[in-house]
Length: 150
Image (cartoon, rainbow, N blue to C red; front, side, top):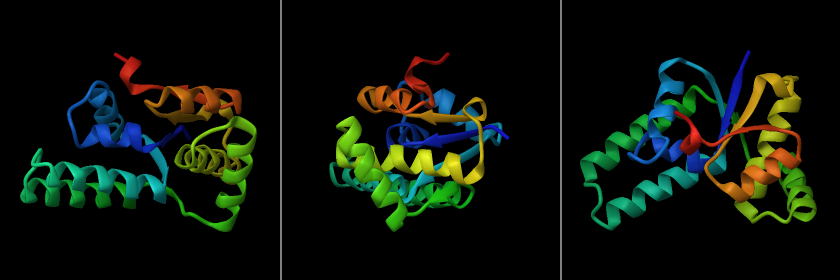
């Protein structure tokens, strides 16, 4: 099984046309196994709400996105914000010097990989955050930045 863990910088590309959106949408169309953190769900929802407040999208589009987001989430391997995730996030923040949310995403990905017993060959961290990608590589994960794919 190949699993892609999506952080919010990658997942949001599914709902807003950005560099890398085509690649992200193809992963959903191919029914690749996806995973993510509850934090990602919150962050993408917040991004959509901010765009609605700023007038970039209307209430109907926001509702469509929110429905699609929850449908996508229901198909993910979900990493909840458990005490284990928090403890691993603290370790990641301390050793790699990441921001809080980035620490949660990386810790969630590392724990998900371990819990499912997936090798690095079959597990990829997907993010468009360069600092986070460097840390994920330093932690031993394979990384894809959808903005650098064809």
